[in-house]
Length: 402
Ligand code: GLY
Image 1: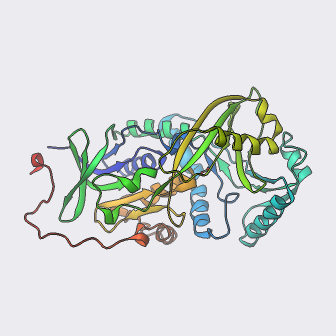
Image 2: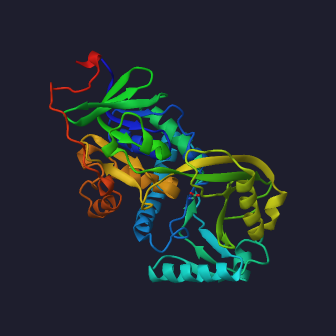
Image 3: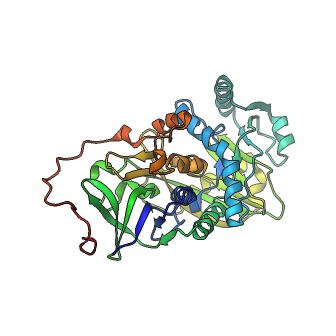
């Protein structure tokens, strides 16, 4: 007889682990399945919690989701630290967006006008004011915008803390690959595993990041339209912190960010490449990062390189995540977070907080219900092909369960 869980989460990145942890807090029996937990985008991510400085003109719904999740981060971090004993390096000193050339400055002016129109906490600064905040910035930085409410966190500490908290809460972590769903009367009732076993559960949440769109054995009409978007990242180390807050910049039209850690690490990111499941770190990708970062902070070229890595963001056609129920009863999604997986983890966990609270529908809270509507997977729902006539009460439950 396979184990019976309330919830099986497919995918052990920051999203899957957060959803699982929140469910354990509600007393649910939870299993997380991943052949290599925390080895995907969450391991590569820099950890910016920057909905204001990363806002773009056509993406106000994404901004609303980002702000709602940013607001949840302090309590989420405090609770996770209590549960795990890990310090998450969560810092809320804002993001400084800086501009280098006159075109970049014009783009920054537009961004500042846009954020002001939306009433967001952002302050336009001169080049000199930027250097007063961050003395290592290049003299050629022409101006900036301080998004004072933005924050950042160390994603590797967050995922380590989530794993420890899940272990302490009695959740099961299964290092295996999912090869299909168990179904009954058209509803998802668990998963089949590559090792030959299966796990029965009341609900399945697909949280497999960039791989969510190509999971084996999931009916095509519920497979989400998720594609991999490659991001190359470089980690540097300095004996003294180089920056005291996140710095983002547009250099001749391309974006670069620098994220400081408490231990002197500086993370440079990130490329955006549509190359399928390619995770090669390339000379061109690293050159682009260093070229742009050096324009903003010339001292970066003196620092020791400690790591280069490429991750795959789960992109969606409208850049909004896919969180909540699908057309298949018992099967929910928590994926498609593209550039915002770490930022959106606390909100996603709340949106998926369990069937009894209306998982993915806001659980009666009108604000959460509205946010759930923005990321509902049903916006991409395709009609299921006609189902064959039923031959018995259970369609594909493994023999040992009958
Ligand atoms: N949020 C930053 C990135 O995806 O590169």
